[in-house]
Image 1 (cartoon, rainbow, N blue to C red):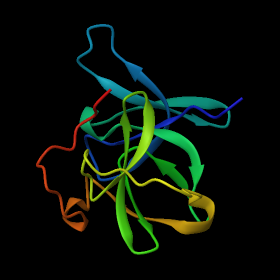
Image 2 (cartoon, rainbow, N blue to C red):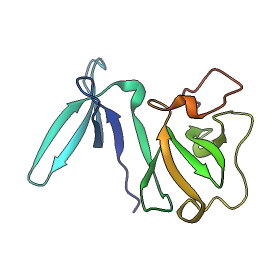
Image 3 (cartoon, helix red, strand yellow):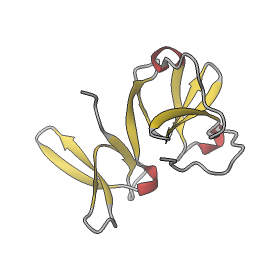
Image 4 (tube, helix red, strand yellow):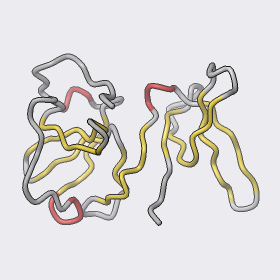
Length: 132
């Protein structure tokens, strides 16, 4: 079974939280439920920063999440959930996906994310939202 988890940035601090995604019944709050050994803490996060774990790792063993920016041998790509799958978009452009050998564990390194480092990408288009 693959690991399903999310990350999101706290609404109060610049800290990232990792765990299960939860929404309030009225959909006005988004939170990450963090398992701390014997208890759970609910941490409210900025909804736009929520990204799912891809089940992939970079060359340093770091988990890759939706919204991460990777360096694939000098090519910068954004990890995004598009058309039902995680895709590697060159410079975050929907019109240019990285194809071929996408062995992230050998060829990719997480160098940032679109929420804190969007200037790393040279976008042709201004959008960077989810395209499910």
